[in-house]
Length: 351
Image (cartoon, rainbow, N blue to C red; front, top):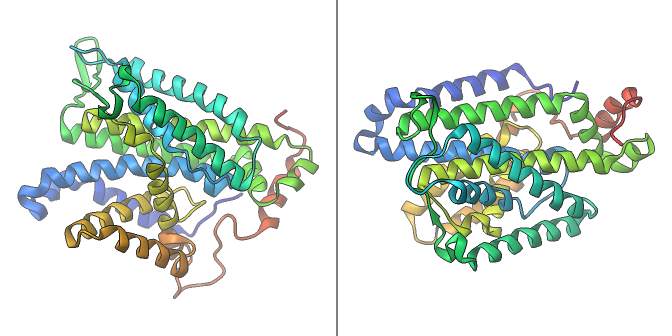
């Protein structure tokens, strides 16, 4: 089975999760009057972690580097903004399926076109689709142009007159985002450990060999592309709920570049690495922005240093620490491991 990590990975992630989940208990003691601001930043980190995790399915698992992933992030935000009533909150019971449905349809259409390309051509076609939607939205009056669209009310999560989760409450919304991140993580963990995930591993390492074994690799990559797009759209919807607006900047190539840097910083192909990367990136961004107006230089140098010193990202320090055994490997350290895992199950194929 793929994606077997040392037990310390689970222990460390559980400790970090508990630390984040209990922030409302100790946040005010540590940060004082800044506790509410830190809660907002922490909520943003959870949303960006879900966004980065969705990109990891494409980049780290399948091996498809996308510079247009923000297309789906912004699509989720604008779907919420344009579909929400003006004078009353929308229901999360139909808003969430709507975001999923719209992003899945767009992902299927775009995926059918971009999956035909590889390497640099895939990067450029995804970038092109993202920029096309960016310019279309930023020049459309119905979408508010460059100003974007404001969301007057967050969606409600209720059954009849009974409110299940008060999403207007910052703490409730924080736990709602934490729950969505955990669900996304468990889903991707299950997906990557399944037969489908083993085939994706094989495609990442040697697509030609997988085709020789009889797999329709285009079908697998298309499904992965759609799933990644849906998860990114859910993250975009949460971001729009937090700040109360959808803006064309959420669709831009720089947003795709930022989430890719989170992925590099955290560690690709690990599922939990992007979570660490999103938190690390936002913490460094906060520190650098308050240290100097030239913070982009510091951030760029940090990413370069991370690539040179930590090729596996922050996750690599947990999976195979320098002071420990050198035998631990990330899922894509060897080609033969992934392909061999897929060979015994060649009777069932995606056509």
